[in-house]
Image (cartoon, rainbow, N blue to C red; front, side):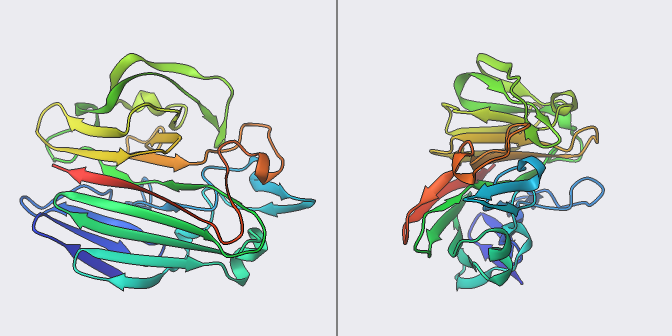
Length: 291
C-alpha cells in the first residue's frame, strides 16, 4: 500500500512493502529527488537494512553453536510492514518477527519506521526493540538512492559530494560484497569528492568514523542540491552500481558494516554489531533536506 505525505513544500510517497520511501518531490518545480528504481540499473528506491548491513561471509553467521543464513542487507526490505499511524505529514510502520524471520534470525523483535515532513526536510526515524528474554544482536542501516543528475541537461560528473567538515578518511574496498583490509586514502583534510564512475570501480565507498554529520549532493551547473543529515552513525556508504553509468547515487548512514573477507564467526563478534538486552530499545534517525 502506498501512502502519500504532503506539506507546503514537498510531497513524499512511502510503500508499506519494505516501508520504503519511493518518491520525494519539491512542489515548487516538481523535481523528483529519489531514484525511481529502473530495473536496468537497480530496482529499489531506499531499502531498509535490517538485521544486518552488507554481506556476511558465505552469507552465514554463528549464534552460539548454530549456523544461520541471511541475505545481503537482511530481510526487512522484502517484507510487508503494518501501518500504525497515518497523518497528513507523518506515517509510521511496524515489522514484527514471525515464523519466517525466526528461521534465519532467532530473535523476537519489533522494528518501527517513522517518516515526518518538516518544511523542506523528510525525517526518517528507526526504533528497534528486543521483545525477547535474551540478548539480541543486530545492525541497522539506510540505503536512500537519489537521482543524479537531478536535471535533464546535466550529467553524473556535474555533481559532487560536500562533507560538513574537512575529513582525512580512508575508503575500504569491497570484493564480492566483503570488506578488504586494504584501506585507501580518499580525503586528506578536504571535504569535497567530485563524482565520477571511476570512483566506484571497486564498488561502494565505505567510511568508518566520519567527523561530518551531513553530506550534500550538489551540482556545478545549477542550484539543485540535497543534504543527508545524520548524527551518531559510525559507518557510511556511498554507492552507485559499478561499471554501469547508472544515473543515481546512494548516501547511506549505517549502524553496522559488511563482514571482512574471510571472516566467519559469531554474530556477537562482528564489527559494528549492536546489541540489546531483553526489552531494551534502540532509536536513531537521519533526514533528507531538498533544495
